Image (cartoon, rainbow, N blue to C red; front, side, top):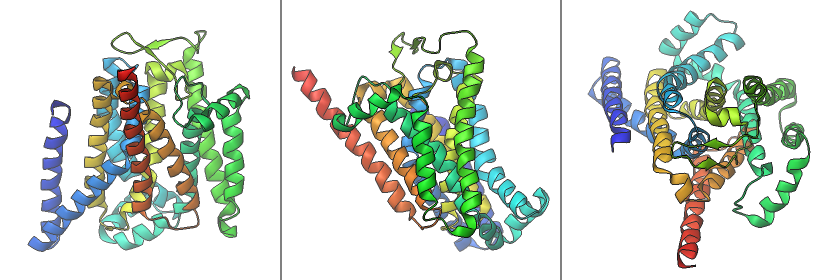
Length: 358
């Protein structure tokens, strides 16, 4: 409970703010409506982001206490205000040729028009986030792992790890294929957005290599208990050790997850304040969930949990690319992710029982 004490206090404060916001813009009924929508958005964000927490934990377990605190403080400010408030406003400002002040005024006073501007560029946003998440998934699949969940598939894919830039090659092929269902008028901007998603992922890798210096990128990384960490995520040891490269990697990863959630929230309400409050509660719990998974060693207890999270990320990446043309309900996205997580936990429990008896 201590891991989530601050989140509970934060949630109470946010619900008070949401209630005041609803009441100040209407009546008691508006207050309860704002509270209900805030709760729905928070629950949606938490349920859809559990795979994000698991992947975060797989990266975070080798970090020292200082960078863990940075992740929970500076990181949460970026996640809440940067990605769930400022980023959508910046998107509308750039694409609609409006000033930031004008967009903020639009968001507060004409949320319907604001949502229309944001939804008009859903395809580009989805292409960027989808390609970044696809590379996270592919690097895991092509990475050298000691444990295989679906052995018949993963053991064969590991052979391609010897091929340079295999994940980038596959990602570009998927991006080209996705152009077949993107509207012709948007193919150019969607292609550029997808390439930017790839470049940002590679950019973080380049930065980590520069920060690594002359050190050994394959050097062993240990957690707080002195246990060697297996690099299943396909990232550099610099990211696994923490520091600015690892911090940037997790922030971009969180951003890619948040794109779909922010835009999907407008299907529930056009009130940007309620959206920010609801998603902020969810983001806060996801951060604490990440630290809880690290401190409790949950990834070690459930051997296939990390696999399930990455498969969920791969599914989300494909869904985001499909959403550049087709509408995919949020419930479908959430259920697929939850299915992979639940199945991986179930298989992990079975694995533990078999090895406990052997």
